[in-house]
Every structure is written in C-alpha cells, then in structure tokens.
Amino acid sequence: MVGQYLKKIIAKSTDDLQFISACCYKAKVKISDIKYLPINKIFIISLERYNRETEEKKNKINSIIKFEFIESTKSKKIDQNNPDLILELLAINIFKKNFKYEIALLFSNNKIINLNAEVIEITLEDQIKIND
Image (cartoon, rainbow, N blue to C red):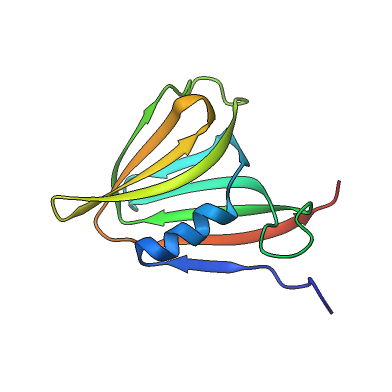
C-alpha cells in the first residue's frame, strides 16, 4: 500500500538538519503548540506542513519536531501571550558558537526563536495526514 507509512527523520549534523528544514518550509505553527521543557532539555514544536518529499506535494501532514539537549531558548518579535497566533516557519539554521550550537528557527515577518544546544539531536516525526 502506497502512502501508508509516516516518516521519522533524525538529524545529528548540520547537513541532516538542512533536510528537516526543507521539509518544514512554510509549515504553520500555532504558538500554543510550542513547548520548552527545561528540566528535560527538550524543545517541541507541533506543526502542519506540506508533504514535500513525494509527488503529492499538496497533502498536509501534522508533524512534531523535537530538539534535545537544549540549554536555553529566546524568542524575538513573538507575542507569547497570544496562544492562537499562527507562525509560518521558513527555515531552520544552525551555527557553532564556543563549542555549543545555536539553532535559529526563522519565521515570516522576522520572527525568530533561538535555541542553545549542547549537541545536535533533532527529530522530525509525522503524526497524521490531514485530509482537506
């Protein structure tokens, strides 16, 4: 059966992360679906994205991106008091800074979330296909 399997992509390098970034281009993210668990050092985003990996590019998928080993997080130009605010994810970039990694989640309208990580351990996991 074609299309019955959901994806799980694990990134442990900058090259791997570029693939996850490409898969999530123009994904919709609701502020209430972004969570940081400082005790567990986990940052989680639930998003609605297009299936860019197959010929059926118009199919939508609910996916979760999990960033592990996150020491701190900062946001810029994002109203966290508005849980219904929807952001459009454009790219995920990574920079190495003083033996640590800075992961930048770039959204439309110059909105940014920066994550400081010990190592690169990021997972994109599809949850369910959405029928329009």
